[in-house]
Image (cartoon, rainbow over all chains, first blue to last red):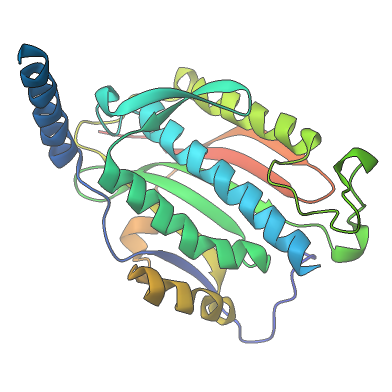
Length: 44
Length: 217
């Protein structure tokens, strides 16, 4: 890429967050709990 | 000049946030029930309402923004990984900014006094171009194979060693550390390349393609 200046010895790197995003399983549990809460709220 | 670069980074990070939510929805990484229909770039998009996931995406982009501002993020990739943490799909955003001298001033209607780039919305040309990316992402499942169950995702940033200094401060502030990706997270055997969209404007050049693993299961 001619538009970027790359000093000699400046290595390319691939970085990623150390933390993981919430797992699909935990999100599914959250969604179930949310639906249950909404059902209870409607039933009041 | 710094204002212009900040504006480009703001526009791109806002776009990447919408794109990441949409990729996670379209590729069914999370249950569809957590997504709500919203309107961005004048098209309907699906955005998560899960607080922890939303915070994660925001923190990720906060750390990427200083790199984009300095034109040091060569690629930002949303990687979908199988249960064994091997990539099955990579949505790669190749980003570059034209050299400063070639940046032309915005149309007169976007200029307010001398603060020509102090605007909160992308200029109409960029708005239209980003809209096309969103539309392409929303229909990309038609050209991709189904992913195996139990997939997760991560975001990879391709940069240079010297540029990582630009994101050190924000990592500490956000308490969101970054590490060098392992070969396992980067390597994909025999990927199939699917180009989705390219844009070239006065302020940014961006290309989006998907790399899909030949054998997903």
